Length: 133
Image (cartoon, rainbow, N blue to C red; front, top):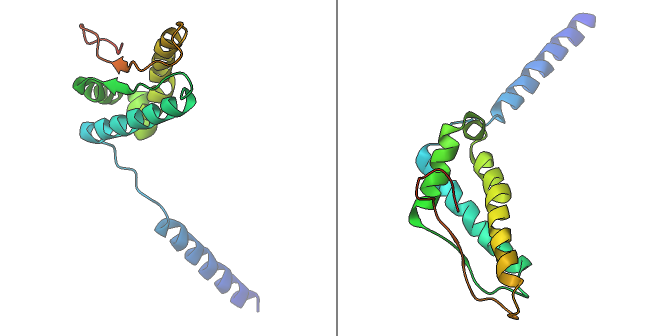
């Protein structure tokens, strides 16, 4: 009986291990094009979030120059921590750094005497290529 129990326990462990292995999703590093796509997706989501949060005082849009998504992808590709996080690294950058830039512009824009602002918040790469502005 003890031998039978040992055999059943071993079979269960093998099946449990097989089930775990079947549920593992391999991690493949993202290419620069993949990172660029993630940056575009995150910027669009940020634009929608800002439009909703500031809807009572701002009717503009979050816009960006063509090279902004490429700049974000390159920045992440060259930063080991960001690159290892894959799309999450870009998500974090956009949700923190880009959001702060956009909110700063919106606070300046919406603090004027105008009731509602229709001006866009424009993102672009600095002339020296070192940062977004």
